[in-house]
Image (cartoon, rainbow, N blue to C red; front, top):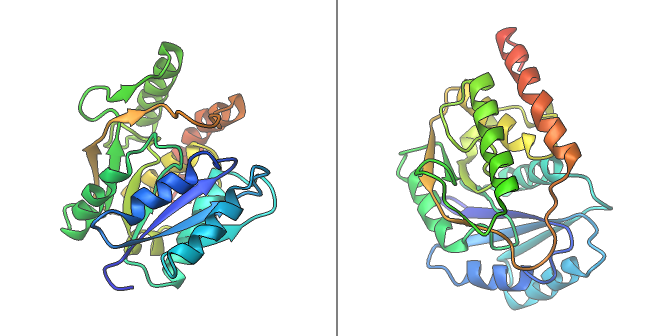
Length: 242
């Protein structure tokens, strides 16, 4: 798997998106594999992925979990799988086309060229690059990033970005088992731990589009977790307890 990339996609009820997403990723010139981590989707998402594994042998991988266990644990499971299988580059993205799969090669290129250890597909590093979000959600997201950045000191604009490429050395050195965040705070914690470990973070401007199929997983619980988790990270870093 030397120099190969694995794209990790957590799913819950993404039957309306996952086939087209996988077809699009496989069609890219960049040679990459795909790992879907499905949390027991009742809409048959995992079965669609299983069927595609026959069409694309050796390129599609699937972890089926029993019920909704959260975004953070899904990515941790995916990272561990990627390390075990020897992938050099580990990518995160959503299944719903809010992240453009055609941007994946740009993110991988930044890490492969050693311009970054962690390349972040950013909605905010070049103004605001979001399409079709209601104003209320845009204000919430933008404000949350200002809040997280001011407390943690992270040198990036999009602290909650879930679209990225990470060199395996980052994952090997940030103690996955110590990560406690499970919603969008997971992204803040991942960025923070990588930065504090001395790795180079770089934002790459992308255009983020609201999903066309399926339902957003955002909730008040996720927002609350992000609000208090940044303080926990800050305090733990002060005392060297990350």
